Image (tube, rainbow, N blue to C red; front, top):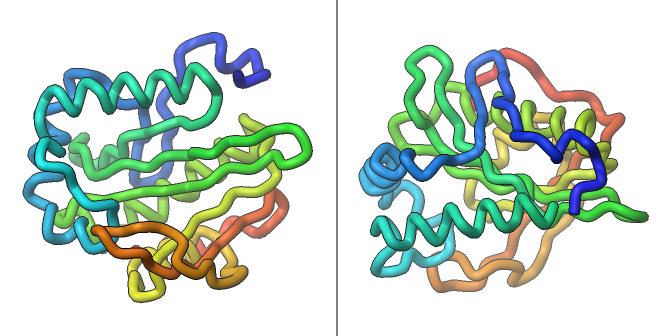
Length: 199
């Protein structure tokens, strides 16, 4: 469980310069399924293999339940990313594998809809989550992993102040195939990263 009093009340929205982050609600289903569906070919090379019922409402309810359970247990917090200028759902970002004690660390994972790429939204979202992880959760270290061919994701992490630390061999099964991943990390006292750049 999260030890901080902050987590005994509803988590407020987090705001960046370009995005607003908030936890997913059940009634986000239609916007989420539309965005994910239209972005499928764009997303599939970088994600675990989609299930046949990936976008079904029943699977969505299970997803929401898992988000809430992870949050209640203090192991992860999922956010949806909304573009500030339009109010539209643009993607998602999760701070997961949250550990306290001697580790005080977490892992960031994210996705963005194809039509929202290249606008700087994900870089802003990663910076917002990093501030939340360090300032509110008092974590010391956050990590992220990406496939070496995912140049866009590498740019996002580097602009958000993450440093490449090494190569994780055969780390995650992505789209049905085990892939090596670069490990990136940011420490609480690292510089934030370059501002005003586009992902």
